[in-house]
Length: 319
Image (cartoon, rainbow, N blue to C red; front, side):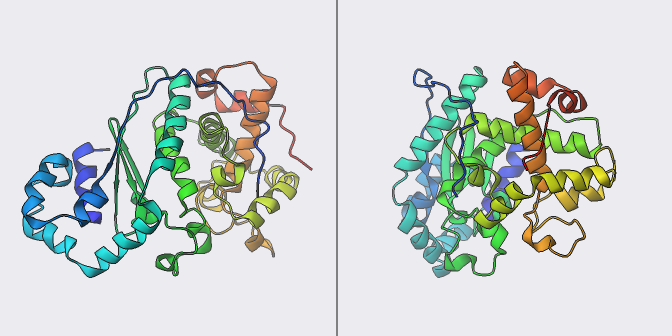
């Protein structure tokens, strides 16, 4: 069903690890209002004579380019029906999703009073990893077939570091990340430290919006990878300092240490033991240290210059 998402994007233009250091707030009195519509269920259980009703219910999925014959062909496709059945085995009911999204929306609204909860639509996208969640102001689309569990047969050919996050527990993290993309202003500073801290700000927002979610789930690491980075944070920071990478503007550092990858590239013998995105982890710890030592609001955090934040963070990597 990837073509639905392509059309939609055009239309919108748009183990456990403890969480003791995360500030907990009371959101019990925060009101949010949204509903969850099951386009996946409505579509794959459709009788052909009811297609018109479905198009009226979800007009954004049915532009003129999508003919009735295309839609009916997809509904009757056996591979797509198998994907639907497998998804239903896990997501026949979505009460858990409503609970998690309610908590997320309340936390987002606590920090951003003008936030309006989007209505949620679930669908299948033929496991389109890059379109697992789409947020378009009043609408939030979640591709449930991307979250069938990391050991599901449909993901057999996926790299381990990718399918680690193909779980129902990770849905709310991906949703939070979509919100956060719109809240972090773009920094003009292209230094490595500024990029790390900008990513760290995003992770700290996840801390604030999802205070009961583990660090492992937030960063999306396998358990051995997060254990490795906790044990080697001091060595990682020393590597950055000794090789004068902190203030470097070399864009190659993005792929080596900031972008999603099976491991980070130190160009050392045991690189494969490390997780990808170690620069994101370090930036996260710098921001956490800053917030621990400075009495500022979340909105003030987003505005502060990255280098000023670094200087005031009193960051010391864990040994």
